[in-house]
Length: 444
Ligand SMILES: C[S@@+](CC[C@H](N)C(=O)[O-])C[C@H]1O[C@@H](n2cnc3c(N)ncnc32)[C@H](O)[C@@H]1O
Image 1 (cartoon, rainbow, N blue to C red):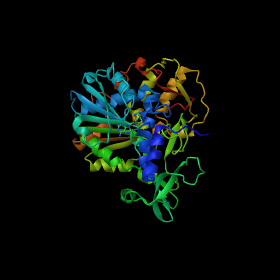
Image 2 (image 1 turned 30 degrees about the vertical axis):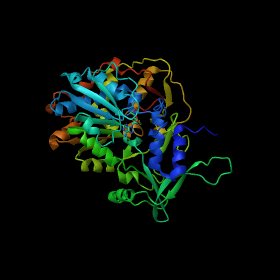
Image 3 (image 1 turned 60 degrees about the vertical axis):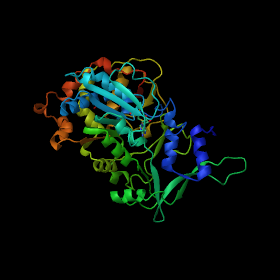
């Protein structure tokens, strides 16, 4: 089927026609963030689902963690939180809604700023302690325009950063560029095609050799060189405080394992289906790759952040009181139309294995539980990584940011579940902005 090229594809084609093939990273940047790109469309976000999109408990439990970080920092007022890549502010609204019910004047102190490249839509009205800034979280100088923050929190930002693609071919590392097919009949426009050539920068080879990775013959891999800029920009936003980064990804040795991931991890999503055709439907689909957490940690450490811990999201949310929320909150549901229903298998299958058919889910209380369970489900969102880093704090104080989840009641005024129990059920209802996951995952 021929589809009409989007403005993003037209711009990419003009650029290639004038200057020759472009790196995949340039292609991805233009396809997602250039004029007419995927993330400039109002419907961006309707093709994939994230933690905040499936349950308000995700933000509520993060509010509990933010409360604890605020306490460790001796309760600054204002307590400045930045969420780069916060999109339409759903997580921000969930955090601030839950914060109203946490003790000691937390809600009066917290000031939450969402920074995103996407245009603002006005969601922040009604949340006096929320701000919305349109900008690039990686831009040098962004820091000087914004207050020093006490916490930089992101969810699924890093997997959306443009990546280069490389392939080992005949013992040589080649970079995969995007060009236009030339061998086409008169009157037809050539397709966008992958074109291997010499790497555009020695940084690609340096990244892999610093990680001790040698690609196997025929192996394809993605490399995100922007992680260094992200780490530098993020560290510069803090004087003293924490960075909490949530995303899907792995340590480099696992990510670049040729037996497990010979073709890399780049995927595309359209209408909740994994399409895996990045050069098609340019500007109409999301493009993403798993995050190399070894490089994230190294880049952050070089920028002055120390690593407190890197734990699975499932463990993190369970320890923050997921079971307390499940027990205390009656499964409420605002109901209504306009929800997207997605099937998940009995084991909470990851998005890439979801079957095509979208099935209705008649039982709203079951949706509430299914979605809640899915946040921590192994094989799905539960395997996402939560990386906690600190700046300007003594090691014991930084370590307490995570160790309270191991249960140190004597050391703290509150336990995670005593705080989670304060969040009232009505704040945890699923409304029309959520995505319904149908199915019956294993109870936890
Ligand atoms: C996959 S979406 C995640 C949205 C949201 N955090 C969530 O969990 O639903 C990635 C978001 O990051 C934003 N983004 C990507 N690169 C960015 C950058 N350099 N600066 C600011 N925002 C960026 C995109 O516009 C998009 O809103």
